[in-house]
Amino acid sequence: MNYKALTLGLTAAACLALVGCASSSSDTAIAPPTPTPTLSPSPTPLPNLVAVAAANPDFSTLVTALQAAGLVGTLQREGPFTVFAPTNAAFAALPPGTVESLLRPENRAELVRILTYHVVPGLAPSSALRSGQQVTTLQGSPVTVTLLEGGRIRINNANVIAADIQASNGIIHVIDTVLIPPR
Image 1 (tube, one colour):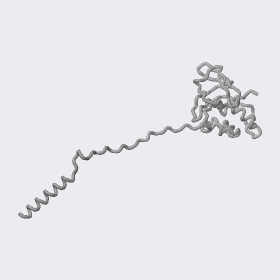
Image 2: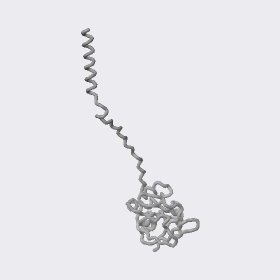
Image 3: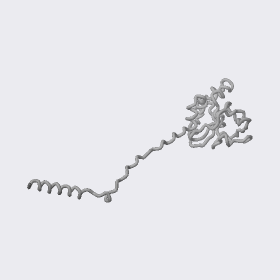
Image 4: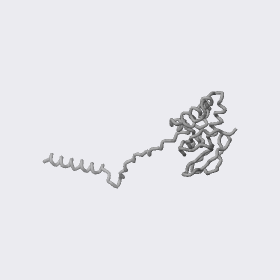
């Protein structure tokens, strides 16, 4: 019996020791699980005006002309700018040989004059354009806005065929005619 009493005593002592080591629920607060930070998808930044034009095959002649004129850097800057962008078809409608002639290095000044006539400093969204409004271009001469029936817009003699294409540094209005500045 001695062993039985000894075993019982040791078991009781061990249980008391374990109970004494355990903390009560009032001593320790249970920490809530650490929330996993959720990353909201950041919007893809808009490309600049030149990148928007370069991504559209209808503007390949315009992009080539901007490169030949040395204006790519200007239209990649912060801006904002509004660009009246002629399509390839608009350039093709010029008299034969005109585009090829303008792209020659010796005609760079004339090319710059024509292309900067298509750029307005600041934003001119279609909703802000008014009939009869004259908007001064980077070239220095104004273009004239005409509002037509059905909400159509004309810039000088060019029809806007797509408006308000967004870029990080401005907007593009697609036109069907190359604008020629006055002399």
